[in-house]
Amino acid sequence: MKNAKEQKIFALAEKLKTAKEKKKTLEAEVEEMTKTIADLDLELSDAMAEAELVHFNRNGTTFYLTSRLYASPKSGQKDDLNRALKEHGYGALVVESVNSQTLSSFCKEQIELSGEKEKLPDWLDAVVSTFDKVTVGVRKIL
Image 1: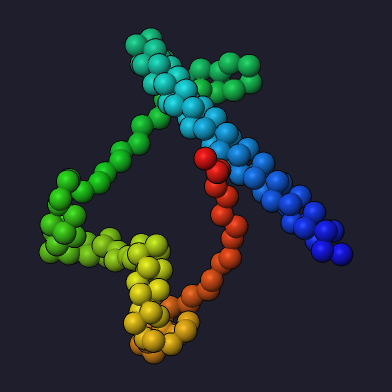
Image 2 (image 1 turned 90 degrees about the vertical axis):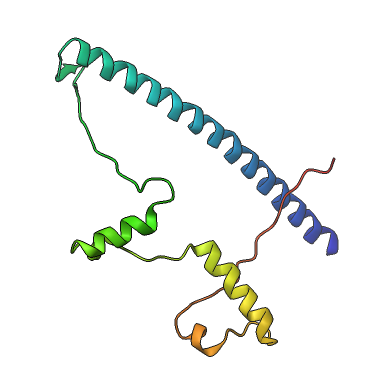
């Protein structure tokens, strides 16, 4: 009976390893394709602008120039930006947030400090949900 269980575990381990390797390959392909798309987009938009062409149809597809403004705080100026927005009546744009990984690490630390297994301090337990996720790590043996 033990042998059948081991065989199932080994088969699942191989499937997991293969799936993780395939995911890694696909992610590399997606990264490469994303770069190709960005390069082609830039080249085509430049060519269209140079030809003073705002849009065109080709094989049932419409291609058109579009422009979108992206904004972010200047380096090291996030707090100044938030303060300026609040001072000028745009405080509703300012959103406070906590990174989920940082919060998870903080909660783990608080559980360890409490001295009780899986017990957050009451003040934190009232506002945070936690759960443990068990996964299988895969590492090549060198």
